[in-house]
Image 1 (cartoon, rainbow, N blue to C red):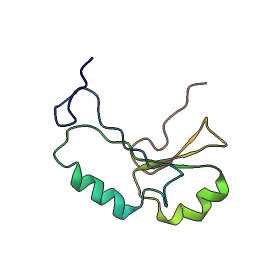
Image 2: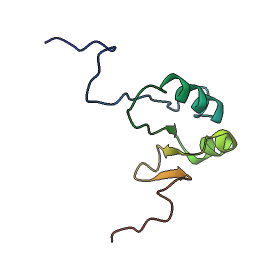
Image 3: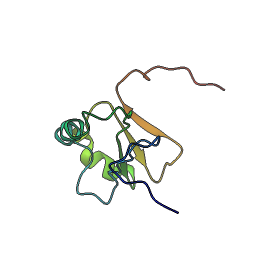
Length: 93
């Protein structure tokens, strides 16, 4: 099976992972750098910072970029959304 070249367009968007094993969460500075790098890409982007627990999240909360998501490993069924159009959307019961 032949793998597509990373330079060839595909239908799957790129997936960039900034996980808890990184030195820090997705900061505003890093978000700007990534947006500049991906400025010619038409792929939609979702930025997610992951942490093992709330204690680690609280250590970095003041350096998490707006318009990003946070996932916490010891509470995996929920995401924290840092602003944006999804705010105050209704939940289905």
